[in-house]
Length: 175
Image: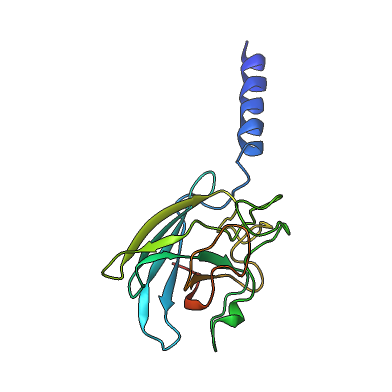
């Protein structure tokens, strides 16, 4: 009976390792991005928390115009000089942009964030498409890092250029 128990226990461990949901990293590890406008004024914080199956993203922003704004993870951890240094959207698998695009979305796609009448926004998002683990192909901490960008206009979930100008940027750093 003990041999059977050992075999079952071993199989359960292998199954648990193999069914991690595509995310890895230490559960509870965190990262943060401090967002700023092009003039350097603070616009808020984004906190990332690793879970067993992906990353929880919590954003608190200020200084937004009322309404929807594109909100994405970009593929380079740099903002200077004019936020173009953040590069294109984070897409380690090469998928196209947009929830409504065939073959999409890519890992950097997130739902729009909505500014209230007083310019604040608060949102929580969950994604299994990224990880805080440095060794994974979908890591936000690859060789050139990653950044959050807030855009002036809403994302139409199809065209990568639909969200307009980059109005806030923050490099993702371990916390």
